[in-house]
Length: 241
Image 1 (cartoon, one colour):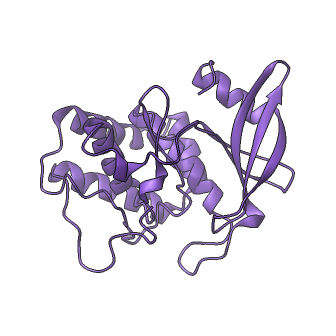
Image 2: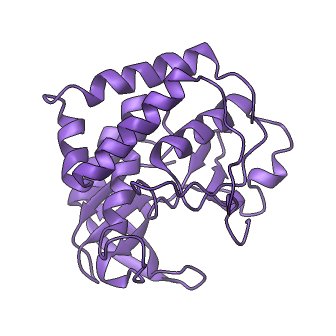
C-alpha cells in the first residue's frame, strides 16, 4: 500500500486524474489496471466501468460496481480493513468503481497460506457470509508486504437469495470468536442507525430487499454464532483460484 492514510487514499481515488495502463484480459467483465495521480501523489488502481459489466441473469444490470463499493462500506463499518479503498466515479470508459490496487505475489493466495492468518481468514469468512459472496475464489484473497490479508472482487455480492459460493470452509462447525461476535453486534447497531452516513450510502447502493436480506443474514449469525457448514447445492466457485 502507498504511504498515506485510508482517508487520503479515498480522496485521491475520488479527485485524482485516472490514467489507464491496460486491460486485464482474464476477467469476466472489463477490468482495467491504471493509476490515479494528483500533484505529487499516485496510486495504482483497478477500474471497473459499469458499461463493461457482462449481463447476468440473477443480478440487475449495471449494479456490479455498486456492490464493489457496498462491500467496502461493510468492511469499514466492521473495522476489519478487508476491502481496499473503493470509490464510484467517472473514468475513461465511463462511470464505475475504482479500487486501490494491492501489491502482492500472485502465487500467494488462500490455497498457499497453509493454516496461517487464521483470525483474518475468519473475518473474511464472516464477511462473505454477510455480503452473500457468490464468488470467493482462492485468488481473491491477497497477502500484502505487511502480511495483511485483503479480499477483492465483490461484484456479485448482496443478492437477496442465498448465493454463497466460497473455497474457505475450514472453520465449519467452529464457534465464532467473541471478539468477532462483538463486531457483528456493532454492525447490527449501525444498520439500525438511520443517521449513520455509511448506512445512508449503503442504502443508496442496494435495494430495500437486499438490505433486509443483509440484516437477516446478520441476525442468523448472531443467533447461532458458529461458522456454518456448506449447504446443499453448489457452494464452491469455479474455477477455485
